[in-house]
Length: 173
Image 1 (cartoon, rainbow, N blue to C red):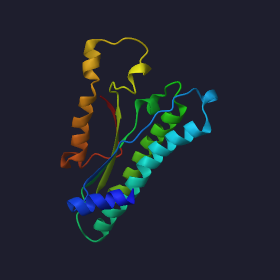
Image 2 (cartoon, helix red, strand yellow; image 1 turned 90 degrees about the horizontal axis):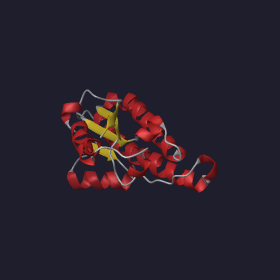
Image 3 (cartoon, one colour; image 1 turned 45 degrees about the horizontal axis):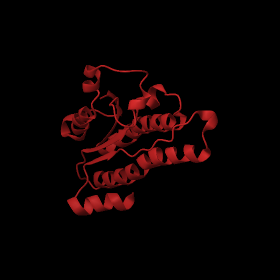
């Protein structure tokens, strides 16, 4: 992760935004879940959020301490499954709720350096989520939950327009 952050800075001259969006599924009911399935999901989601965030935050903090103005964004991806729970996803839900907590705590720690920390919990319909629905949904609901609606929120959170917004979890498509 440190090499990726360094590469971004070396390539573009600076780093303004980090979006963490890595994830895998290993769905299984708790009593049938293996430790390997638990560990894999937790590692990808939680460590995959922590590692790049740590190095980006260290870069931004160093800038701030050097007297340079910092207006940086940390944007994480959590899930409504983590917030509300979904049977068969104890590993995924726990990891995603962990990311929500990580986001809120990071906001409290990093705000003094000019860094905001927010998360998006998409309700979008994707290959990963379409089988989780309790039944058929309307065409109107499908349009409302199209994944394309996540990008405008991420774009706004990455912009200077969201400077005063931190420690928030945004739910929706």
